[in-house]
Length: 187
Picture 1 (cartoon, rainbow, N blue to C red):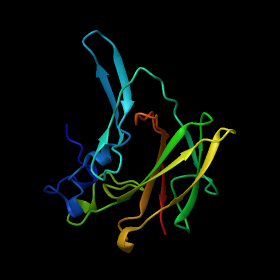
Picture 2 (cartoon, rainbow, N blue to C red; picture 1 turned 90 degrees about the horizontal axis):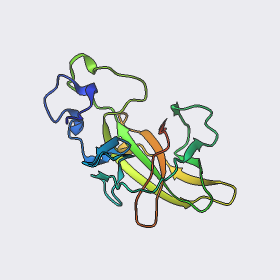
Picture 3 (cartoon, helix red, strand yellow; picture 1 turned 90 degrees about the vertical axis):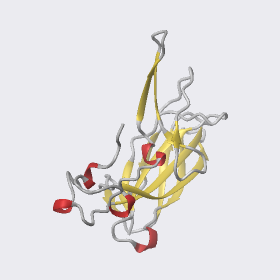
């Protein structure tokens, strides 16, 4: 399988700023379907390997893990440009559930790409630049507010696009489905 970003179509590998060198981290959120020889089918989403900046994994289990809800407080619609690096996300789900909030800073690098890039859309990025993860526990009311920090690595004008998602994590490290990601552009 080839997962290079289409935005660098027509340029030699590894592309500008290594955009074509996809690590496993960029596969976070990818849906994987496994069909076993007995006909059983399981599906799940990849999630970051703990403390890794290069890998994601999927642990399939016979236990249903719910999908969290996620919203950025004070931001009425996403994707959006925001004025502050400090943001708060509200994650909803079962009381007592352990939550992981992932903030992946990306950048859109197109130097030398024919036509200035291929199939470009607003708030698109083609490489991971930095990653942060925050842990929290859903409160009795079914939500938890998690303070996060966006980033714009080295004040790079091509970076600063931050994808934010969340998942519930079980005691054994298995994670469930990811909340639909929201993208904010850091100031």
